[in-house]
Image 1: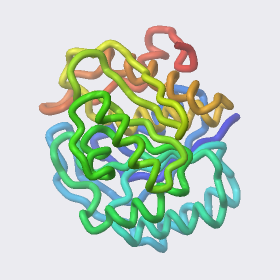
Image 2: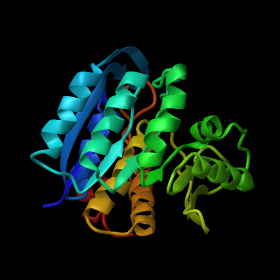
Image 3: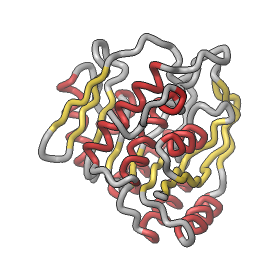
Image 4: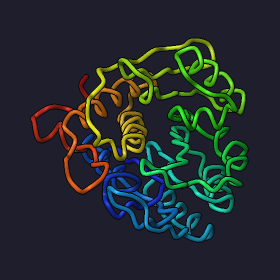
Length: 268
């Protein structure tokens, strides 16, 4: 059994964060573990409140996992404060996992800030250089790169700039552009364009969390990075296509779509 760790915030609505990550791991046949960084009171309509876990407790959770259940891959999501970011960085430096997927979560689908503005520099300085791949959406890539992104060439330039921050590789997600859903992967030498059909649905809560944890799950299963990204793209496309029309706001994706219809999350 392969093991994967998620370091992220809890979503009480179950569509994003720790809950989405653990569902994604299960859908891939990977044993999931968690380090909770924040608790959010959240549903499909918005975030009612956020309470951070102490940096000391964040590190202690990492210690508990790494010293007994060493993960084959790690995904990092919501790390809202500089203190939490430094605690996670300390854990990564102490236990030295190689396959780290960083999803730089900044704003929820409902518009709530999940990364304190003053923590942005700490994220760049502490976590980006320790990650195998960084997976920002267009807004996050723009914030990290200091530029507006309106097309594919902008996505490539943003990826170059994020690599200059110390990232080993970058996936800029183009889900908010028009046309096919295009992601651009940059390994420092070549660009790879990964496309899928655009699904007409408003139920996209947790897509970024799910995509990044799917990458981590496939890395844990032994696939190389590019193949893991392609498989994750296939998985999230299916999860969006079979999304759940529940709640009164932005509904969640269906993390178990592949099991319900008899498919395989590891195939594409």
